[in-house]
Image (cartoon, rainbow, N blue to C red; front, side, top):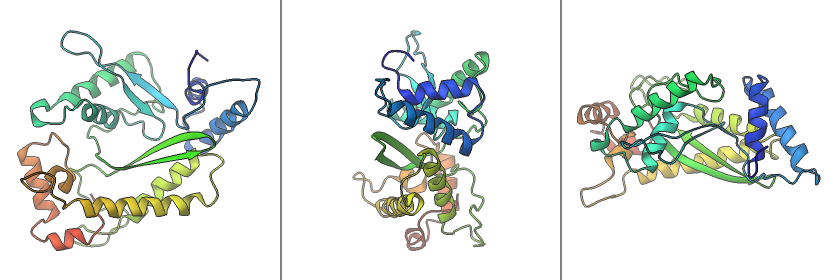
Length: 263
């Protein structure tokens, strides 16, 4: 381990080098068991404040070839385009005038990963459309901080998910939330008592809160329509208009009383 390196990051690098990161369930249990055994041993005074491993880090360059702050990818979501989009959001580059900033970072990150033979488990360059984070969940367990983000499906993919049978494309997407909670509990090995039930209650509360705040006035011009429609922050007018049509905002009462669209 390097000085000041997080134990979770060192264990991920160790496991990834030996091909022990590809199987989500068993691999996560192995890594967390190793972390728990090292963290609990007074002979090893290591830094262990974060539960989730950072699987990849990339430094984009500005126009003068100087590096920006890093794009960081963590094991709970290794999708490269999501990380690039979130980095763009943190850099306040989500206005339409900065359109394409996250795309350039995404392409650069994946080109570098291919050159350096970064594993698919550490960085997934398959998806090309980012997902907007709906809400975050921060927990403390085993003396470590755990940060999870719940993301909607692609705003441009309106096919029904989670067994939705409604012909208009609306449904309660609780199955998607259950899948996320099951994945999170699998990362916190051994999981907390009654983990799935407890986290699902938190997720449901957060999800309902997300729906309730959609219609709040965000500016003198009304609600935040990007937030309301679930579109990307740098979406063009055509994309925003298409999402508005597909979301059927002509019936806002119906939108409000469904937890969210099955996008």
